[in-house]
Structure formats: structure tokens, C-alpha cells
Length: 171
Image (cartoon, rainbow, N blue to C red; front, side, top):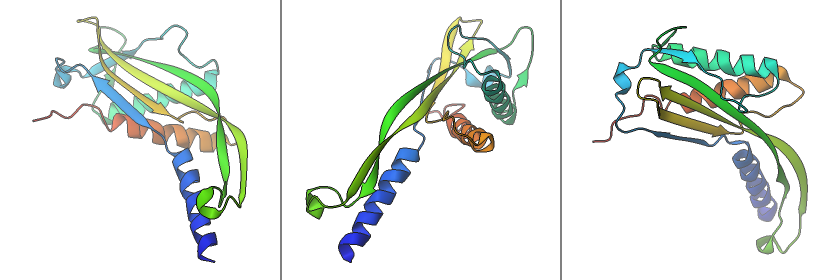
């Protein structure tokens, strides 16, 4: 009975880790992030998603995140240019419980192929012609049959990503 409980716990942890969104960011340590207050969208050639609705969703959610940070979207003379790149890929996911030498090799394990998406958001300083902040989140885009679930996943991913903007000064 204990063996079965540990097997189910292990399976749950595997599923939870597979669903986690990995967030990474980097920034220009010479940039004065307090001076940036306005932005304009810039399309990165070959980087945007081909689906117009997903493109609109990404832009709207980023606009919301930028507004929550005190930014104002402008058409001329922006402090920052914002662009994104998206990529969809496929990976194997293991599903099962009780497999491996610890459990005597018994149990059930199956694999499935899932579509995963990485989203990269870049912030450029046009005056310096310099990338000043880049963040990426994996598993932000994952097409499924439920558009509301997709939108919420994207909102969650971008909220996690923009938690890291502006970067905190290390002392």
C-alpha cells in the first residue's frame, strides 16, 4: 500500500513539473530603467506567431503588463521598443506511476507528444540602439481546444515574466 502511495505521489510531481512555466530574464546593467516611461511595439521579423488572434492576445497582455508598470503606449519618440518572438515545438511527456528500479520495474508508463511554446519578449532602448531587457517563458503557448484556458495560461506566463521588470538592483 505504501508503495502505491509513493508511486502516485511521484506521478503527481512529474505531472506538476511538466506543467510548470520556466521563466528566465537578463538585462543591461548599464541601463537606467527609471528613465523608461513610454513604449511602442516593434515587429521582430520572423518572430511573431502566424495566428492573428494569438498575436493580438500576446500584445494585449503585454500592454496590460506594461500599463501595470506605469508605461504609456505612444506612436512617436518612445523610450522603449517592445517586440516578441514565439516558437512552438513538440516534446515527449512521460505519464505513469511506479516505474523504475525502486519499484521493482513494475508499473505503467506511457508517453504522449505535447505541443509547447516559448515566448521571448525584448525591450530595446532606441536612443542607445541597445537591447536592455529580455525575458523568456517556456510553455506559455500551448494550443488546445479551449481558447479561454490558452488565454489564462498566456496571462499567467506573462505575469510571471514581468515580475522581473524592472530588474532589482543588487547591493
